[in-house]
Length: 340
Image (cartoon, rainbow, N blue to C red):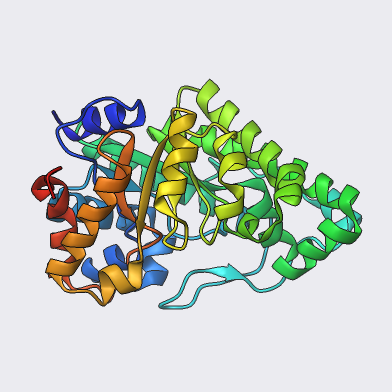
């Protein structure tokens, strides 16, 4: 069974020879490739080569074009900051009111020199080199997260409470653009689109239903309608949102370390959905020993696997993680025994 078969079977809840390996490697990949993170996030070919190195070095079952959350805002004309060793960000919000929203155009993801096209370049390079061997992921932000990027986190949260009509207009705008960006990545060769919505973890269940879930569902349906699949990645404590998230009907769900894995498995398995997670990236990986990390991986597999489950951290693996620990992490699916 090769990686693509393993990944696809896990998504469908079918028997696999071992649970797939799908850690999120961004700063780690850049560091091991000898790249400043600024270069990793602004040069799609360099990003792709770093991911391909991770594929070869650690035997992963999926690689990703994820680097930062500000591709679309940059192409909408936002002033960007590109620190040498941190993720890119907007210097200031793009949207403060209705008139700001109305003046924004609809950027073409394929425009040469754009940040969105740079991600397409990364996807093309990864697909060209490795699509026959592993699953290739593109990346977008879900509408709520993107709205927070465009308006400012605190400003958009206030809009949700005090200007809901305006908030919904921004969400509609973001939804259309994220769908277009995601579909462009499928055309470039991505099998799956990862979609981040970390800001949505701060919403109450009632707010999540109104301002996040319905828009997430539209992105999922559009990506699946175009022949792709979608991973929903919401960092943070989503314990109160699990059932609503499961009803979004994404193909794969990331589970952060502060969420009870038993509860997450119950919610997602009930809808026939696959999940991944949820080692604490700091305590169970970066600061752990190889032996303790491997043991914790086995615990996660015992709880959530072996069907409909992929092994990963709750979020990104830090660059300071020793190679020996990540090697133990990646070895764990092969050394796992149900008798443990």
